[in-house]
Length: 209
Ligand SMILES: CSCCC(=O)C(=O)COP(=O)(O)O
Ligand SMILES: [Zn+2]
Image 1 (cartoon, helix red, strand yellow):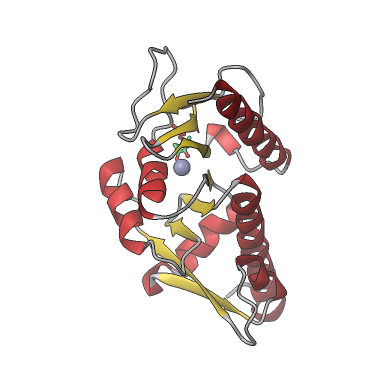
Image 2 (cartoon, helix red, strand yellow; image 1 turned 180 degrees about the vertical axis):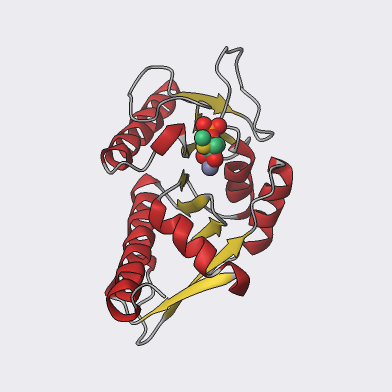
């Protein structure tokens, strides 16, 4: 792998992390981000586990292989949820995968958990997913949150298809992806806007019921 690629991807992911951090989207060290560095063999940078993601250091990311293991010896531990990012790269053409816990995505995930998905229609932000047809519908699957990460990763994998751009994890967060950091961030911002506006609408029209 060319060193310049690694440095460029590191910088790209660090810049996205700063923007998401400025929005307060990493409460209590939650959240993890990754960016693909190599396709074959699969290698990607992922946030180190348990760190304060509001800070920017030279130990923010770990380069891992297709088995989610560090490529080089390191004291740093890859994210506890690296396996979810691995599944995204295995099953899609994603170049970047973002996982955040927000109040809105947690509340939405619980409100619609029993339906197994939440759908959006008629909002302009749906076009952020390249859905431009009149009355296009955006589907967001919702999965349960087993503590055993391999089980969680398998639940995520079962929901991935060409018409899915992110998966909600019940009372946990969302994992979103895109072909590159720009698109993954665009998708995440659009999801969070749709969640927040939906919840605000319910509060203003139904008193939150
Ligand atoms: C304190 S959040 C619990 C772990 C989690 O869900 C998360 O997103 C962050 O875990 P990581 O190992 O990536 O720091
Ligand atoms: Zn998480």
